[in-house]
Image (cartoon, rainbow, N blue to C red; front, top):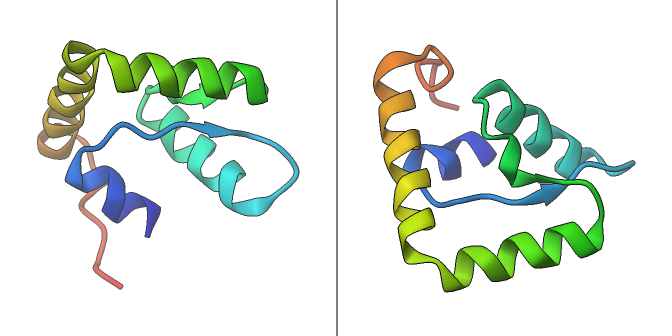
Length: 81
């Protein structure tokens, strides 16, 4: 589910914590070297989301990086579920 969303290219932001879903998302973002999507706390998360919402160039840059990663990494080449 999360990898499908990443495959489509939108910026993702999460706070790695004790809950499974955010930890999985943080792990995937880290594996893809998209560390800016892993917030350290709720304040960092809020600031990152607001900055992304206000900065179209940054969103486009993240989409370009994800498109490049789709073509050159094995992360997205697994079998469909």
